Length: 142
Image (cartoon, rainbow, N blue to C red; front, side):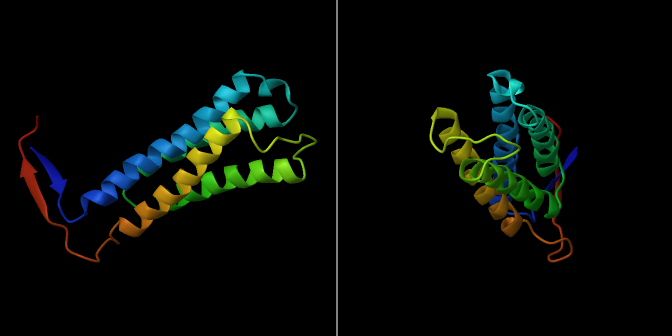
């Protein structure tokens, strides 16, 4: 038998799952970009790999940890990534200046902004521990 938490609204779980996927996708896009040529850009290439690792770790924590903190960190990660991109377009970053539009710039921006919105929705929908008594019921495993 396994316990199912029926006190948490199903939208909170859906937001956490989708938010986690968007955080991981943010990192995965940067790994793709690293392998598509950004590996040769000093400093930026290494930061793209770090972005991938951080995205996977944070995304998994958003998914598997029930605290409101992790979706908030997921939103901050996506916002920081998006902010760094905008900074690199406007002023350059570590001597590298990015273009505002392009296939992958647009895709990454959509994923990052969606990650911010969905992770913040997960924070809002997640019940605070102790706010309402947890109602657990057991169901047969399977």
